[in-house]
Length: 381
Image (cartoon, rainbow, N blue to C red; front, side):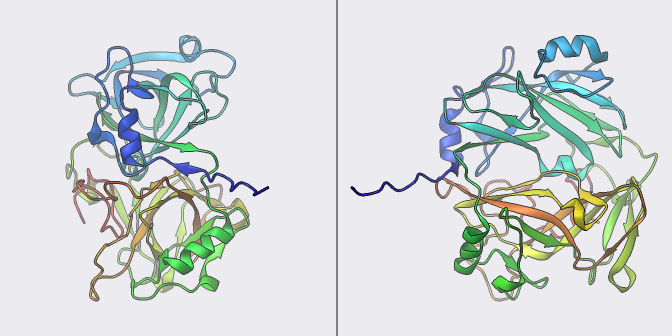
């Protein structure tokens, strides 16, 4: 008897996600239907509804419904209609999303903040009714979806329709093992040196037993080497591209001799030393660094859609790959950071195929050619 080949897990790509709009991913009562413009290569942007509730504590809705908890914890209501409302720094808010889910059996979801959300130091996590874990929708989930929002560095203006989080859908276990990841890198290099001229050899990769690929921080050769969020700033206009001068909100970080000291509680933006390239049939997720190698963490789980750093027609004068932006907060004590120190881990995922559009195609506001790049609402420094 011939043994059967195991079915490998995979993330759904754009054409499959678009086919689910209006059914598995549909508008909540009173909301417009989700549109194709929300679909990226392997993810779907999610929209805020028109009402935000300030809450005195975050929660998981496992024991009681979201609305029941909201009745216990709400301190006040804000309308996000029209010009929106200002969400204060250090406060927590709960907003229903315009999308609700009706996932078929065997299809599960995971949520993460969008890039601009993390770079504005807006902490978010998504809740599903009756599910005791953040940022997950279990297979077959049916119901409303909510998002907790906490601006940590700046007050921020948000309005209905703003997109702070995204959803990806998967069948089975799509993450690559360390052996699979090493083999993929040998076939199609994933990481390049700081100049983008040389693919890293397999022995230069920092791989853990769970299939995580560590990225190092790149301080040397950058001026400034990073940015630190300022204190007592004006309101961030989240949805307005180029609305703010960088120095009104950020302080430059200098790394003399390739090192700098992070202050406890401060928020920083750095860039990776490696240049990353995600092949068309794969995607990747950024995870916090292992706490065993430092009292800091990458603050947000970021998602890299298919084709991030990928160029179909590489030219000799064009560096390969794109640096990853690292959002970091130190805890407890001042912390010395040195060029080349591991800052985050990436998990790679196989997808159901090559999407119709790779990352950046048809989206001129992407971060495809970024280096040390802040959120879109800040003008390029």
